Image (cartoon, rainbow over all chains, first blue to last red; front, side):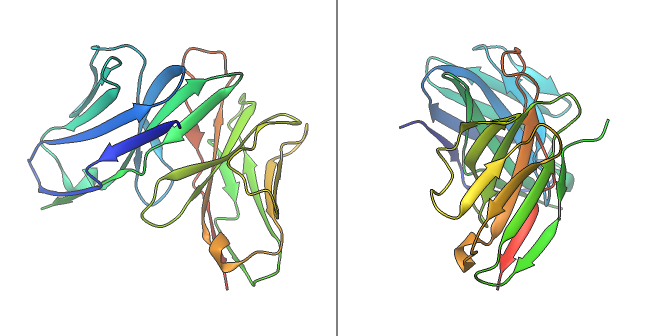
Amino acid sequence: EDKVVQSPLSLVVHEGDTVTLNCSYEVTNFRSLLWYKQEKKAPTFLFMLTSSGIEKKSGRLSSILDKKELFSILNITATQTGDSAVYLCAVEGLYNFNKFYFGSGTKLNVKP
Amino acid sequence: NAGVMQNPRHLVRRRGQEARLRCSPMKGHSHVYWYRQLPEEGLKFMVYLQKENIIDESGMPKERFSAEFPKEGPSILRIQQVVRGDSAAYFCASSPRADVAKNIQYFGAGTRLSVL
């Protein structure tokens, strides 16, 4: 059965800390892995990863994919209170059509 | 370029009533996905539609739930005879053609359904 597992489920840190969020997957016919940030509204797109070992970076956020070990990590350095959100990982499988599998998310709480 | 538009944002129904949730995809997007999210949980896939076609409805309950994406107008997720367990946030996402290299889904703000 195709599935995406995120860990930890929740995390509390203080401003300035660095955090690493994990996403492991078992999805047939992998096509891509996406990270989203969800505050109290629509999930917003962060990164799409398709190739192993190539880091994607945007400001204090970065992500990398390991297609051999079937996982991805999302790093946030120098965290700020505005980083508090649920971070969702989704994996796209390609069959006759595209199908996205979402993990249950990691809830990050950054305290001042 | 407007994003994915969902309405209503909040919907309150009594048990046994019908709920209709609307989603207008981003301009130029022809693929629509519906997800359900319970509190403290991730997004659960329900159905994937293209214009006038249901591509994958494997995540949708067999009874009371239906979805459509007509040639003209928004996609509709319809829940008949709602029960308390249907209370959740329902998100719609759209993407451009599925065969492009960057098949990114863009999400609407969701409809929060409360069943009394």
